[in-house]
Image 1 (cartoon, rainbow, N blue to C red):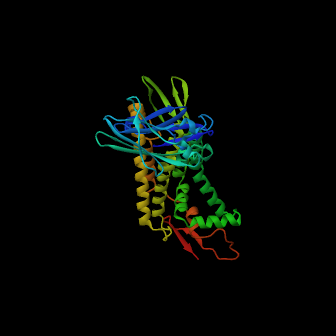
Image 2 (image 1 turned 30 degrees about the vertical axis):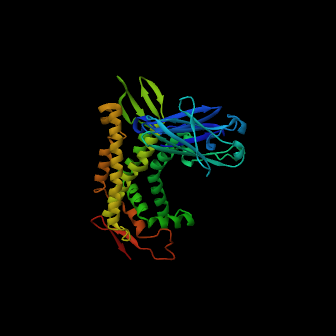
Image 3 (image 1 turned 90 degrees about the vertical axis):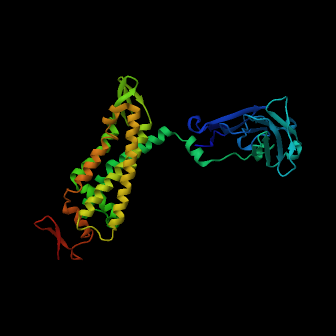
Length: 407
């Protein structure tokens, strides 16, 4: 992540730096007359230019840095580095004529005269153009002001969101929400369908359920909840992963332990961790719902009462795509566990490795399960209407176990 900057409490900068390992990023930081300036760079990027006076107004710290007294700023000051000789350093304020900066005592500091009285108010722009002996040119611009009341602080929504958030709290909230969603979704669908059939729902909620019944997604969830085997597996598997061990393997060198969603046990010691909450959230945001949807779609496509308005060709492609994404993510997690915890962590891994045969078994069994007619009947009749007013179609099973309509 680049330019991950944020301001805490009004005057506390947090400046995250992109990594050195993959991006070869580093930071040049300078303090000049009590003002801190910085620039983030890439290795072998030349020339390197850092204006220090006047400072970039986006990063002014009112209570920590000196007052902007124009008498202090008798020259524009710039740090310049290169692996070749510096040919020219030009400074320009607003649209004025550029001026040549002079090197100070054979060091990296360059300065040029200016009249700060001309810029006591308002926001202005400083442009520094540096050219070295290899004809490489670097142009740096920033805004500045000598009146702190006119300072315009930097504002980065994503950076503020990330750096001002508590990841510990965020991961725990995501864990709780995903666990509740995975554990309660199918029982809730089953409960609502039973209450709907028994006409025990309020009229407004009954109308809402009537609309949901027409949706393909709700029907697929209903078919999964109607299969006892699928229902118990997809409800209890999230419960186990929320409380039981995910992987058993080499947690640290020569020491074995177990990883849970809420931490790790190593040498009979509990080590709290937050990343497990995020793993659980991703598992039950992508992989688990993909398997549920696949099972529901298989049962739905086998059922002769399937709503013809649903385009099954499109659904086949959609479900297959979801399974590909879920499978790829699951494989990625498994490889990650192998690399972290060794072969034992791969084979004794209920979260990742075991999910392949378990989800695969449920998809296979979806081709063979029988769907209770009680739930399939929701698509033939509207239990919300009273038989006194409208003649309802009654459903009976024939000898082959299929539903048929009798007037």
